[in-house]
Amino acid sequence: MTSGGVQCQGVSSIIVVTMVTSLMVAYNRRSSSSSSSSSRHKEGPASAMRKRPKMALVSTLGGYTGVLDRKSLRMHCGTCALVTSSGQLVGGERGREIDRSECVIRMNDAPSVGYERDVGRRTSLRVVAHSSLQRVLRRQRELLNGSQGTAFVFWGPSSCMKRDGRGHVYNHLKMLSQQLPSLKLYIISRLKMMAFDELFKNETGIDRKSSNSWLSTGWFTMAMALELCDRINVYGMVPPDHCRSPSNPSVPYHYYEPSGPAECAMYLSHERSRRGSHHRFITEKTAFANWARSLDIHFYQPDWKPVSAFRTGS
Image (spheres, rainbow, N blue to C red):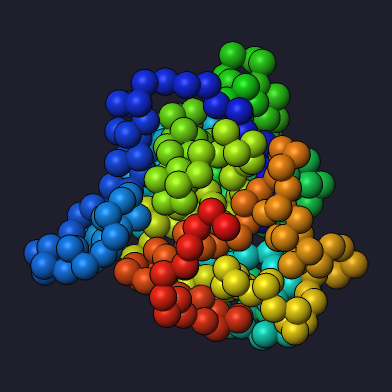
């Protein structure tokens, strides 16, 4: 779930807080019974999330705008399968289970062709980092031409997404939309990007900029799933303390790159790095595990449950 760096310029704190609230609007629609249990959960953006009423068949999600028409993404799923790119998926044979989900979410250029038994066939939403655009284009026949209604959401620095002719990622996406008008292409707005940053800070106590690190595509994807899914089944994500044990078998970081770096080696090197342009993979997973203690989030392949609060910022 690696992604490139994001450079956002500051705006007023009032705007940022407003966008954080908007980011979680779907889960702020509480049922009358949820108010009695809210005091038992940790305060903060994630603790306020609750499932939207089942009658809300489609929701408009602010901050994700169409490349050409600038219309907001409209999507809602009862149950989502969020499929990571982890080598943990190899041999699990969860493909049919994944495909039975109402919506299937994938990341970057992770393929399904050739891996259907383990990762499934269907894709409802694909979240793509600006740094993965070229890899997606190289797999155009598989990922784009055969998308069959998949919505693609691209994120990146505001300088890459400018619509004034200077945003090179937006320019590519605009040409792609013109060539393949049936594609559903969206970009994340600058203010929405800042809301993701603020969410990370609120949930982990770490300021992404001052820590000289970057959010991963996994962070954006999980946060998006919280907006559009009532239940999230995550496939291939290990618990935060997984890599502390040397007895765990080594698996590739990406299931489709068996000769690539090992997953734990990648997680640990990024978590410990202070050189910049690294990700806080373990810190992010700690936040996800803590969310799962009170939200409808479940982890499979490997199967695990957060039994106690994990400490962030380690």
